[in-house]
Image 1 (cartoon, rainbow, N blue to C red):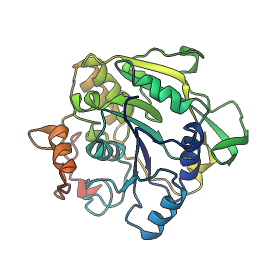
Image 2: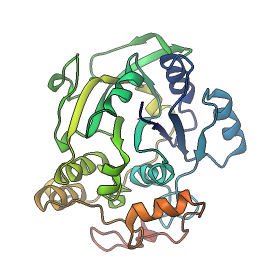
Image 3: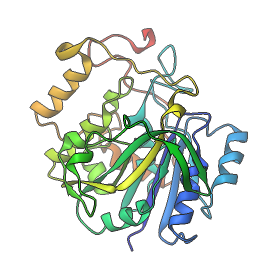
Image 4: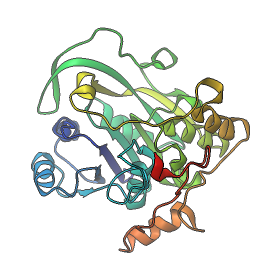
Length: 309
């Protein structure tokens, strides 16, 4: 059994972390051998929040940390307000990961039966396995088990028809959705982590998928790696906004897509020093803090100072 780090990320006041923690406990039969947990939480420095999640977590021990310094959100931000910065959050977790495999799950989600065993099976083959999702309403969850929900049929995974019910199928980089996946740490370090030039606007998941594909890592899609998401939970509080520029083919997101898809980019041009994310991870695991000097200071798309955004 390969040691595996589970990563849970949130920037919500009510993430329903208990759903996730209870489901993992139930599916593992209360055993945690080889399992580690990292929670990257925007509110991790709040003592009440730390106590709340510690009370909900069944893991014997887990790491609960805030996202590393970034110009897009948090204490060291350069922007006028907090913006969406999923790449930074995911790279924070990668920096703390001490196992050869790591799996990510979003907040507001409940791992369905078979999720944990599917993760473990995925670590026995080469490549990155992408999970599925469904968005539903009025979820009632007890001790990690779904008791009821309302499904209006509109929240189904757009990739669902491409998969199979009894095992994984080959996937393309564009099928990489960040809601649930498991990857060799080596694959994520190979692409220098998630591209932090996507912070502010999003699109970091399929951009990572395309880079993984360019680097030769196999990708799989496994419908059995299923999480249900609370649709109304996404709107229960003000969400962290995304900031894009331009529209359509002339937009910032398409400029990023062209740079990666059409020009074969294999590594994110992140600001981690000459050794990249792998070097920063070594320093973090040795006990050093993250650097507090944040980069970039200008938007790569048009050069606008981030302090104006």
